Image 1 (spheres, rainbow, N blue to C red):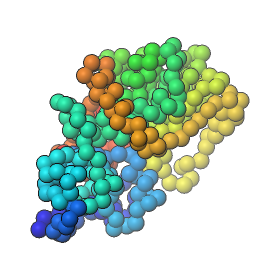
Image 2 (image 1 turned 90 degrees about the vertical axis):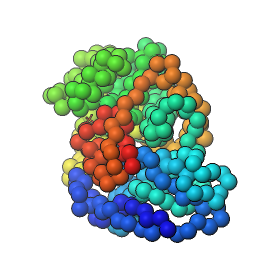
Image 3 (image 1 turned 45 degrees about the vertical axis):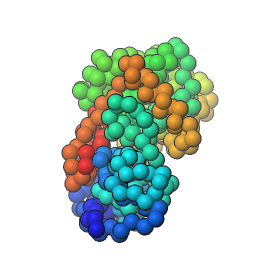
Length: 330
Ligand SMILES: NC(=O)c1ccc[n+]([C@@H]2O[C@H](COP(=O)([O-])OP(=O)(O)OC[C@H]3O[C@@H](n4cnc5c(N)ncnc54)[C@H](OP(=O)(O)O)[C@@H]3O)[C@@H](O)[C@H]2O)c1
């Protein structure tokens, strides 16, 4: 009998998440039947989407949603042999028994690269950057790409792919450390700390007086409006996320409204969920591995130690604690 730990949504979040919203509970797992595997979390992902998703789709008492890299500890399923590693979409759980193969994806072979990359640059956030930029914005050499949330898991890869495509990149992030990384190591062209910029719209205009061709929006709210006001006619906008609004309550979500500019500049805006391209992830992961191995892209991780600290790692997403991908080492 294995004792598992799991984090449940004790109360729906109201504004900024707080400790009493999430509770650590124990559970005794059943013995394995034919088709079952027992997996143990090695790395767990905390992601911004968990905040709006919980409001939409979880009931109080449900296990928090999420992915993990896990090792198969026991197996009665030939597709998932003992000791192999999987990306498991089983939520914030230390151990899990399941026969549901739709929740399990073998970790693709990435040679000597860390397993945790399966939750970051070689997993969901990396694929979000890859497809959200390339399939929606179609950036071309010489164009201007704007990305916010640029020091995080998705944004940092967006900026680098845009550079690989020969674009000029304007980036916003919220700490000096992130800005230094983007400027000095990733060689993005113009980098702003949005917390120190009084007027984001004006800052973008100064960096791109002729306007922005492609805008990858991770932040939403006022940052979205600032970007929209700087778009060129026929510009393309990839609506990836809106983290600045995830903890907002009703009244805080009102305007300003950018409809006039969107219409008059004939912009193309498209929201997306990265799972749309799941059948193409394999090839994109291979290409990204190549970029890493050739030194063309790099990544950072902020690793929180201990399953019991999942909550703190998650809250840190909303206070900018992570540089690159936030993961928890179980
Ligand atoms: N559409 C999809 O399929 C999809 C998939 C994955 C992610 N996403 C979205 O992509 C965005 C980035 O996700 P990620 O996993 O890469 O997260 P991340 O950027 O690694 O972490 C979140 C970062 O957001 C920034 N942030 C927090 N509150 C903010 C605010 N009020 N204003 C501006 N920035 C704020 C913080 O950095 P600073 O220090 O810069 O403030 C924080 O470190 C999120 O909006 C997420 O929901 C969408």
